[in-house]
Length: 179
Image (cartoon, rainbow, N blue to C red; front, side):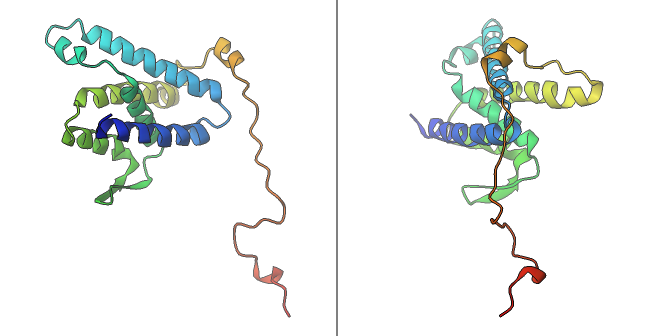
């Protein structure tokens, strides 16, 4: 329960919610598949990394991969929203494209291992590339959600109802009643 863990839990709540409400709106099965893909990639990296002689010491210390999965979601969100302006602790501003690097620097400053965040960035980049970049290049989608996963989730069309008399902008000049 250190400061780095608390920040990761905050980012889990924030960016998981933003991904679910924006990029994956009405696509619950796709969101689950992203998490499943990330967990599989992270587990594979740690298992393979544990067999490499010089890296095995670093990977042996990683017991809890939820921080890496959280960082994967932050990475995917930042790639999908690269132009959003952000501020870190009110100290400096940057665009969302640099958010993973800012958080990595913060983790290193508070004494956490950079490996955990780097693993999340690797998994996030693999997902972003295979889901967004590669299909635009080739027209093929290698991470298409399998139908047996889609059956598990009821992906209904999202309908946003808005009452007719609610305005989000000031009324036009000709609609303003004159006394």
